[in-house]
Amino acid sequence: MANVVLYVMAKQNVETNQSDVSLADVASVYCEDETVRAKAQALKIHKFKKDSAPRVVISIMKVIEELTKLNPGITVESIGETDIIIEKASFQKDTQADKKGFAEWVKVALVALICFFGSGFTIMAYHNDIGIADVFGRIYELVTGQTSDGCTALEVSYSIGLTVGIVTFYNHIGGKRMGDDPTPLEVEMRNYERDVNQAIVEISDRAGKEKDVG
Image (cartoon, rainbow, N blue to C red; front, side, top):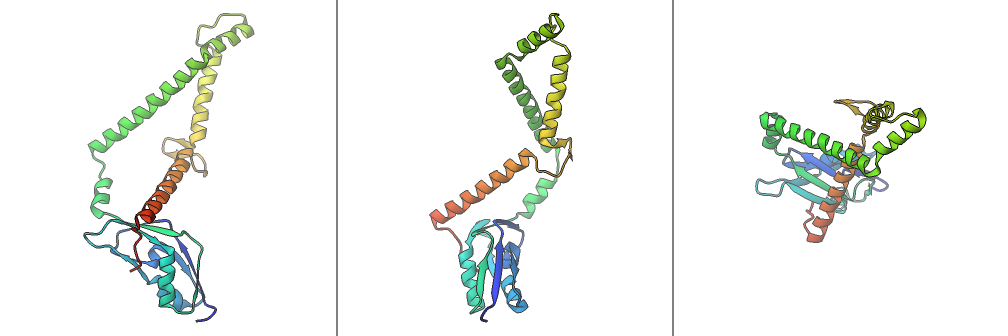
């Protein structure tokens, strides 16, 4: 099979509910030779057993090794991740997570209250630290020649502007997205997931726990 090139674009993290995991489940495969492509997609990457760990890390190098054994003479080009994290999904766990009971709503309410009052306290502490009330009072006195009572057009405008700024920054009003751009929270979550995946790969590599294909 000279001059046959097989392209493999592996994903970094894959969750599956199947015991037998094939290459098509964890990567996109392309080859002009449909026979080679079909055989590559059907290659078994891992088999989850009842007593096995629910998460494994497989190096793309081991996948390439098995692909060249399966199709001697081909050239395999990896254009994706260098390591694949495969997690076995728990049907029972997912089913329980879908059930929104009273306890789940209580947790959501507590988190919402903590975020609301925590953010409010942070904003008030910052304003107190910089003495914004004195600044507004001084500006109001200089402009109008009258003493501020603490609730003037400056304070009202600033409060409205602060609210609009927060809503615009987080790109959400209730459960609706204002634009197509990812929110800062979504960006941080993706960064966190990428760091976690990298840590899993490095820990597995140092411990020598990378699994062989098959």
